[in-house]
Every structure is written in C-alpha cells, then in structure tokens.
Image (cartoon, rainbow, N blue to C red):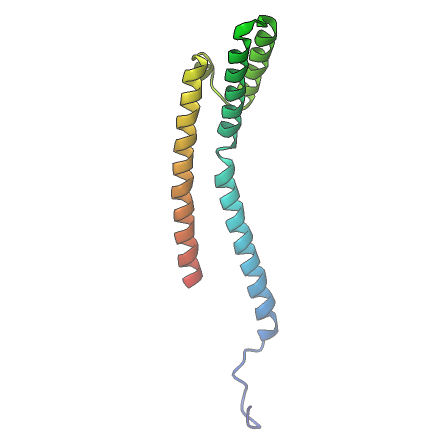
Length: 131
C-alpha cells in the first residue's frame, strides 16, 4: 500500500509482463519439443530400412523351397524401397546379411548420437532456465 503522493514500485507496463512471459515460455517449450523430435526422427530411415531388409531375409528363407519369380519381384521392390530410404548403391551391392549388419551398426551409432544430443540439450535447457 502506498502513501498518498508516493509512486508505486510496480512498473507502469506490468500488465503485459505475464502474457509475454507465458508466451515466451510456450515458445521455448515448443522449440525444445521440435529439437527433440528432430533428433528422434534422424534414425527413422535406418529403422525403416532395417524392417525392409528383415522382411527380405524372411522372404529369402521362405523362398528356399521354390518361388524364384516372386522372390525376384519382392527383391526388386525391396531394392527400390531401400533406395528411397537413402541406402547407398554400395550398401545395396552387399549380401543381405552384411547389409543387415551394416544397418544395425548404423542404427546403434545413431542411437548413441541421439543420447548425447539429448543430454546436451537437457544441460543447455537447464542452464537456460536457471538464467
């Protein structure tokens, strides 16, 4: 409570401080979610390629009893799908088991990178919130 003639200690433009703070907080949280989602989605093509290779391996095992035409058609479709997922021509020239191992190693590397990026973003966000 102020005595008549004294100025209030509250700033003149304090009515906008709360909405701006809320908006700023929402923008920071949305940016953090965006960064975390981008890091998570980096590995999506490799995960999808591993699924295609696993299904191709299963089809190759099942085709051992005969169905070479269907296997050739499925192999061509798998090749096209893998190319669309960004698998290089050199990787596609590998035998399927070696390609599966290469994709598994790539997935593991991306998982470790994601873990390190998540830790860095958490530390950065924590420092930012303390300031």
